[in-house]
Image (cartoon, rainbow, N blue to C red; front, side):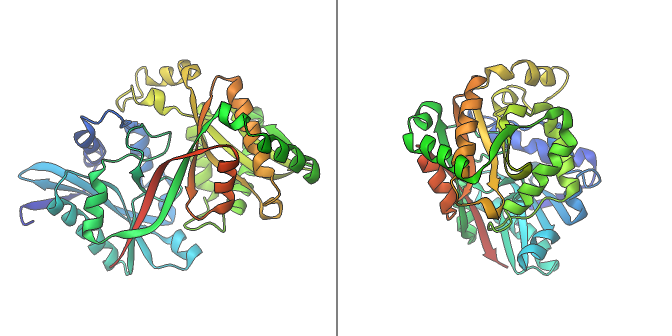
Length: 373
């Protein structure tokens, strides 16, 4: 491994090289979706991304004989450790040629940085946190990822496991089909009964009142998911930053609110799978990529249920069935007949039962790894 050397990313040109290295790994991979370079530049901009108000990151590019052969990030997420009372550092943005020596050198680089910060465990892949692309694809390599979900070569599993990284948690993705969901008489019955008993209504987002709607979503998001393993609440600045990017792409009829006497008690964010279009752009949004996103979105036949939750007082009342039933019907109105519910923690029995009630198919798995350092 003496022939492997590293560059720390410092300049914008370094950062572009770091991002574009992925094209080398996936050049012959038909299911990979090239990320929008501009999006990755924004994500990793320490000045613009509010994630870095409570986190630090160091990016490395590995070279052998002057040729880039891998990349990795070491991440210090203070908010995670504060919330969970952990002493965990993270690695992410891992890309590597199929070479054990290179992989070991990359992971050693991240581990050394994290040890110097005083951490006792290293967890990942986190790109850069559980609120972004999270985990390594374990099953489901014969299909492109849905929007904001990761994809990787199968050999990454071997490279990480051979380093000594162990499973800490698996994440599930369920495939939902309109016909199969609506064939579930139980879903319709549970949804109707739950809605009546709880005295709730469901409505779509009012995009003209976007800022107020966003505040309601923040409330539900941070309250509903708080008990979940690995969950880190999004700060106001992070949600605002994310919403600014997603606003042009949001279909207000697929962002739903559950209300009781005018108070928001649940919410769901469903996004059309823009990866269908992004895949064809090869990382470039301009000059015509943005127009394609806007003009070709009616051709999208998939959506992803990114978040769906209810505040604790309204959980375990069947109201998740109400949201799912609404989502399926509203998605069909715009020609979307397939969906992915992801990601779902392997031990989140409530969400797993909800997916099963909808005749959902567990069709992809992801894994978060950890090692003592």
